[in-house]
Image (cartoon, rainbow, N blue to C red; front, side, top):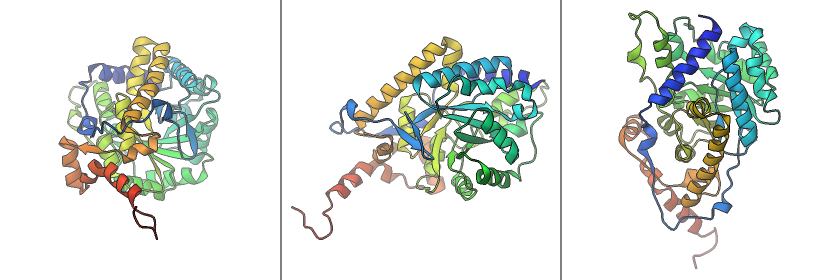
Length: 370
């Protein structure tokens, strides 16, 4: 199978997963506690935020999807048009194929051509050299370099990699040499706290937890196998969900944490921000809208998400994305079981606004309460 055939198959299988999705994931175990008098005016909500010092119009972006064929180049073109029209960042799909075959460069270059002033993220795997990483950055004039971690996908892929021990050293080399912030992201199996701390020590600026719940690349690669005796379906539920990964990384400092994987709506964006994410990446959901309904509907959807997220934040009394991290959450179901097993105390999440109010009412040093 050629690179182009593989990339096209990935798109078809990813969209098919979206169309067959049952609709539930671990985000349904995260509920905001409603305080009916906490609301603020929608006009007072500011969606802007930043990751690694880069300003974002809204706390979500179009995450890495595709590239490497004529068809996927057209998809990238339309995704970039949507990013330019809405002002949100966009990541290319894995550019590792371009580093092996420069003839497919245009399928990635178009992301910058159609989005000349926006935030663009280049995406490569953890095997690339420093020079190759620079080539990927230069091709799309990237503001951020994404390095994806996909060991689970690789072992299911017939033609995949089988050597992973050099990844930490390679990531550290690239992070030290790149002229732009480096983001390391999982592709759907989650980043544990141990991993995020190790990435921070490697000089990585952003860790995207990329958890289970969205596009399942183990299933995609398993579906690509032509030999019925080669079956990896037993591995399809590997890893941690996005919500679990965020809870596992609560309180980590010195590195921005973003969230990807299973984000279905503006409410899921709000949940991620409340669980500590700086911003969220959306891939499969936006890809399905693009392919089913076209670029104009994708632009409209992204703009609606911004409006709907702002309204949710107004009800919660959160004027900025960062302030959602002080809103009360109830953690239930399997997610609560995960937290108990990992020793994560979740009770405090349900009392955060009370603690914030108490802190605000504490008299300043040297003063007595009125």
